[in-house]
Length: 209
Image (tube, rainbow, N blue to C red; front, side, top):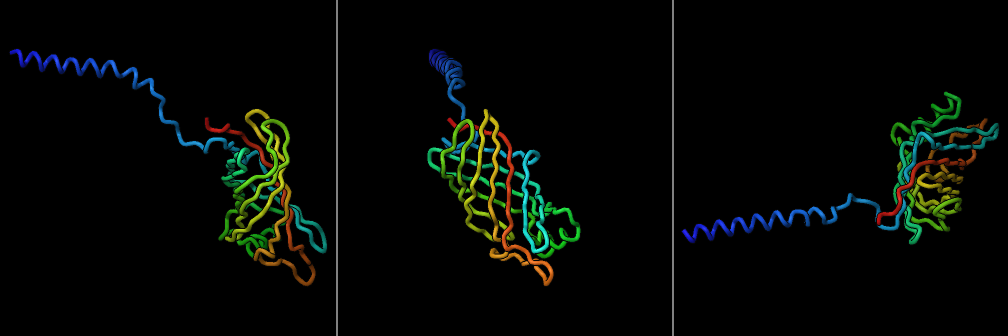
């Protein structure tokens, strides 16, 4: 009888210990969801407020066009200069305002049925990025076009305001040198580089604590 009482007492003691420990366990910090490494700002691009404009000179006239953005998410660590993420444009959305010219561009030059995306992936940033207001920086990274990767440096103007940001960038792409077909003919001569202008807007996620 004494042994039974002793066992019951032990069980009750263990139960009481567990109950007493529960509040302490619940008070422990919970595991946070994965975030960018500490110090990195996350710039999310809003495709509905962003655009890609392009300009191509020819012997007859200057051609202006656009591409739609599909998505964008950039990680920038101002303290180390490291950058990551990507901005993706929809190659199939390219337009210049002339249906015949656009069909030739997609079929013969971009081959957008095979290569449906144009992507920029930054690897580093130089220049001081202000946490509020305007900054002039340069993004160094990889430009993926027509299935091939090319190193580029993109100068950019960036404005931060609260949890929103906007940015613009102008640079040239030597598309013929990069292996795309030259659309020139005996009548029309086309420049070997196309000028790109990015207009980006979105929101900012602060660094992980």
